[in-house]
Image (cartoon, rainbow over all chains, first blue to last red; front, side, top):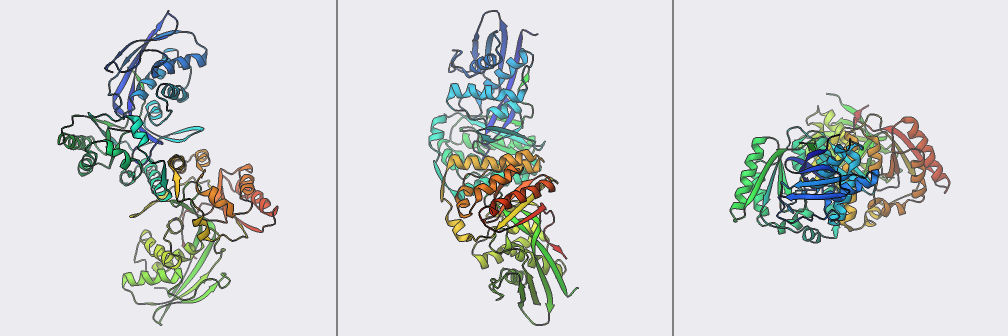
Length: 309
Length: 309
């Protein structure tokens, strides 16, 4: 048995336009890294966190990574001292599933380090529990694609029913993270509690179309289906310049464009690396025009999920 | 050029549980027949309607079949006298897309009779217009699967965007038509105008799951996704015995069971002819128990749409 392991887990785009709370996908870049080390000293401890500007708790009972690892060990009845080094390589609170990436990296790492005692798919509840205990919500639309890779549909939360969807090989994602803050709480509170049945019907027509487009390798259908008339209009007011940046992405050839998770990051899908980069430049210009700095990430849809590095 | 043609078009199950207003599929049986005959006498005339108990209008400007054929001829600028014989082979107002079957049969027949001047997919607007002018609503979830065959997703109505979904070869439908009346108007009016966002999310998770299950050949996922917590609970109160009949279908092995269109017919899906027949018997017993007569239809999902007979 190795005495240490280092795992990368990817950023994720949740919601994916029309698929609020049910769709998400992973990207190759950015992502977080977790290093675990067996220790003779009992308990699970966080020895270092870098890249978080001191914002994340080091208390093992409050950090999503350590909580998930603790639950994993408790469930399997294993008493083993563990030291955790967490390296954040993406911005916090950016709408890119930052805490999901760290949590999944940790759970995947402990399972690998202890000899794969569980199947990867069965690790999901531990990662969700970590997210729940630390953040107060247990949405799976970041954690599930982060763990499974690819595009994931969360068909149901009760019981949890997660479906990995095969996707076209030439599907590229552009993500832009503008340097503004959106509180997840605000992004939830701004949503309508009630919606018109007719709006809901239009939305589930698009969800059906997006899923069909992914599975039928029909990128035009994917693009036509990326319309969200419920969540995006409500949340986009929290992101300065959203309308112009989205228009820039579509004008530059994006299949579709919407908010990543609860924002402020914005993502676009396209069918080539070249297009994805051009779209990123166009979006960046949109934020430049209103003096907001931003980072652009371009990658294919990540098919692998976490990996040992 | 032949001087007459006879076409069969199939019954359809619209909504399909969670897919209210966006999903529908065709069955092999029952269906309607339309016979068209070239005539030297100008205009489009209905010469006979059988099987409707005298309920359908024979006035060519009021009948969905003749209206659709008139629009087709007008659009192509063709002046040709046409005689129509309509043979209803399924119950009216049953939730099985009775008017859609007649209308599609007529439009398909006129296009064939005049030498296929248009592609089949381009006939949809004529059939929809016939339905709209005669019934006051232009939903495509019966007309589209009737015309295209198979399972159809109506992603959007404006613009109209219809996607034919490949389905598992072993998918069987059981339909039961209880001898009670449900007014389509009542079935619409009973629906909530507003729904909770959380309910809508659960529903579009299921729509995504149902589409994924069809395309991934995953009949278990199809079954798990056939849950409608919005429309079925509202409408099922109009169908005496619904809960017991649904339970009987599920107990007999159905993947899922819900209302066909706006009812009163009920459909169930399963994975073999044997299962579909057993399910039909169980459902019929449910209606027998409350002294309601019923007809049972068992067939595969029809892949062909209308056909010349």
